[in-house]
Amino acid sequence: MRIEKAERLKRLPPYLFKELDRQKEEVRAKGVDIIDLGVGDPDLPTPPHIIEALKSAAQDPANHRYPSYSGMVDFNAAVAEWYRGRFNVSLDIDSEVVTLIGSKEGIAHIPLALINPGDIALVASPGYPVYHIGTQFAGGEPYFIDLLKENSFLPDLESIPSEVVKRAKMMFINYPNNPTAAVATKEFFDSVVAFADKHDIIVCHDAAYSEMSYDGFKPTSFLEVDGAKSVGIEFHSLSKTYNMTGWRIGFAVGCADLVNALGQVKSNIDSGVFQAVQIAGVAALKGDQACVDQMCRTYQERRDILVGGLRSLGLSVEKPRATFYVWMDVPKGYSSAEFSSRLLSDAGIVTTPGNGFGSAGEGYIRMALTVAKERMKEVVERIKNTKL
Ligand SMILES: *Cc1c(COP(=O)(O)O)cnc(C)c1O
Image 1 (cartoon, rainbow, N blue to C red):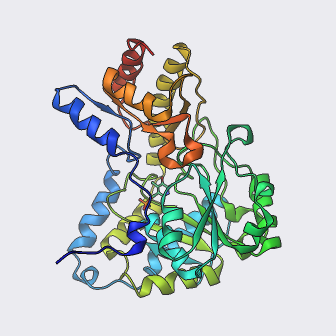
Image 2: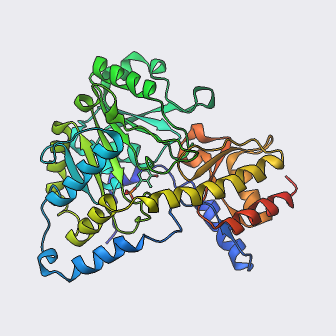
């Protein structure tokens, strides 16, 4: 039998990293010691107190059954307590918090709760691909807003054509940002609330990197600004904050009607997060946050080695204030793909070409700070020895 895939899969954009993956295998097969700065997955382990909490919770038969759909009361309460402590925002644990199987799950599902055929979701280019793909899966149309360096990689909402604004049902924003590492100001969030209010556009803010920041900078929550809770929902993840990408736990908070709508989709698709993982999540959120400070210090040190090193080689690169990404201009004469490919073939370094995150990412590459500092020094050394 010939398996005919659905149109929604056939319509997916071509996988842009195919050629790079092939090249990576080719270089690896030659025995080259590859340094991989390609993936945004922490290389550090989950802190031990979180693992201990999982171990004992896994032993308890009460946790072997289906969890509640909206999340355990204890987890949602820990989220609310953490939120108030971190952002000074109060949340009603019954109606304004929903537990997610990682924030990607919630981000991918929320368009199913909101989008009708023909509706537009505003998404950024470059950006995390789940926003536009979730939109397309739900039958909606993504409209890409270019994030430009001259606007500090914040979307220019005034540049969106009025007929697009009229059809827009929702928008996705993400600060601190993957892949550009840009951060948002409170004024920007204020302007988003005003725009959303004026045009009836729901705001979905992805705050996966809210805890990964440097030099004393603390990112704000979208919900900290006046009026945000009536127009938006914010997605959080334990993945990056506590090195828990494999555990699959996150949460969404904000406007009760949005939390409810997302919960309704989820209750018809999944059955929640393993309770032992939620209990470990409680240990993470309520426990000592020194592990988070330690994580930030580790990435900051790597950042300084990489950015300092690249600048000393005459390359143009900003020092990120948050996220574990360095978003670098490719040198003149190269496309993103060409430069990435050059770093791989001549230096054995894997990076991600910026155009893989959308056409406005052309001209940049993304490097993740996910290797130890000795390896980071080696990265600089290898680039120095490459004729660019
Ligand atoms: C890593 C990441 C997430 C987190 O995904 P999880 O599903 O929570 O692991 C969300 N958004 C962005 C932009 C990310 O880079």
